[in-house]
Image (cartoon, rainbow, N blue to C red; front, side):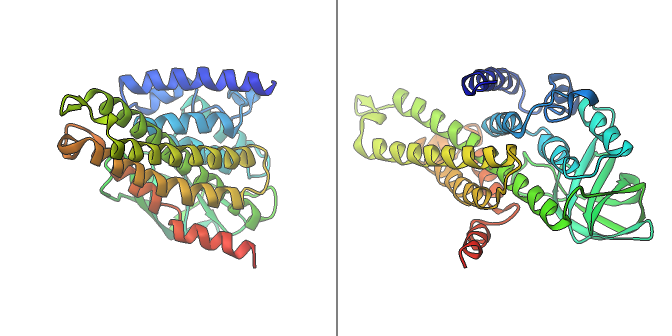
Length: 333
């Protein structure tokens, strides 16, 4: 496909996803499977669409726009990225197919797991979408352990953001079904997985920041005070302009990071830049949206609190902005 054909395809995918999530932001796993989103990056011969992370990023952006509660992040976007880092095997192909057709729900888990003698021991916190998964992929050592959820202790981990489903995962000499080795150097594979996860959250934050900007601009055009729209006041214009700049800079950084992940290039710098800036900017944009909506912005009915809490959690998950900037600083030593 040429670049413009990709753009047209992404626009169509964005439109379809937006319409589906607008009907119900609490879409279930079966809906994600039926829409074909879970299998976007799964090879065609294994039942998927054979697409790239560029297409997955479009879905992540739209889920962020809707503050969607679907388990797409942990059970699709991250799982497929992890499977792509593994050596070819019969089980790996079966897991790919399971993600595409929804026959089994998997979850990727990064923690301090030790894999030894057919058993896994360790702990992980703030694992996205682990509750309800059939099998968990525990990252440890030189490979990934496939473990049935029944062999682990998976507990829901409540956070202020009610749109996320996080959990703690504990393995106490849990029996392993099989260990799948990484295709390349384990350190590089794990780093690539972490970069992908960081970019995925940046995509989500970009989507919610875009939605907050759109909702705020629409509101200040409609809301009148002293006989004219409040959007005509200079202070309001400046605030909206600041929001727009933050969104546009975020969009550029996320686009560069998505391209790096899609091309299987070293995405470390691009991912850190996108995660640190975009997730911080989303908090600022949601905060300004709440302020510019006036008193109604602080009510439960407005729904802005949902976006603000989601943005704040995204900023903290998988490395704070300070942690991401530390990664950048180390690159230039």
